[in-house]
Every structure is written in C-alpha cells, then in structure tokens.
Image (cartoon, rainbow, N blue to C red; front, side, top):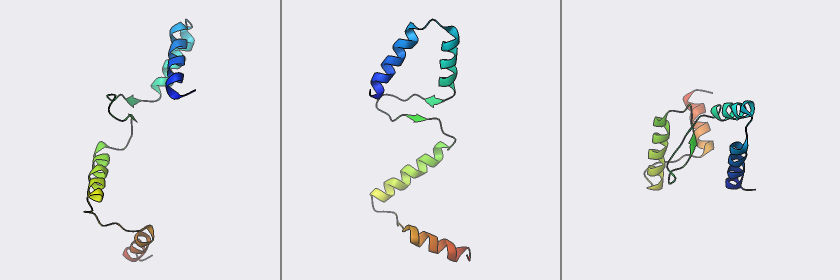
Length: 88
C-alpha cells in the first residue's frame, strides 16, 4: 500500500469511527507531530527547531556552489585545518 492509499484508508476509518476516546487518541497523536502545511507545489517540512535563517543560508550557499562561486574543501582538508587552528 502506498502513502496516498494509506491516507485514504485512514481517513475513511476516522469518518466511520464513533468512538470518541479513540478519536481523541488519534487527535493527540496527530497533535504530537506539529507540521506546517504547504501549497501542493511546495515541499512539505515538519516543524523544526532550526531557524529559517539557517535554511536560507544553506540555500544561498548551495546557489553559490552551483554557480562555481564557492571554494570547497574535502573532509580531510577540513579536519587538518581544524587541527592546525586549534592546535590539536
């Protein structure tokens, strides 16, 4: 069963359910996963403790990377630079 089929099946079960206790439990489960609904053309992201400004910076850096305007380092180079900078 794919995701969309599962959603439809769950919605049908919820509509048919008359057990208030069970419905309250489902409501509590869904409330425990805060999310932000996006338009159909946008990606879906659950709420995150990471500020939007960090994602925006990542987007800017990725754009620079795609344009070849950012200098990259290998993980080995990063580790070596940190060792030198922090005298490790």
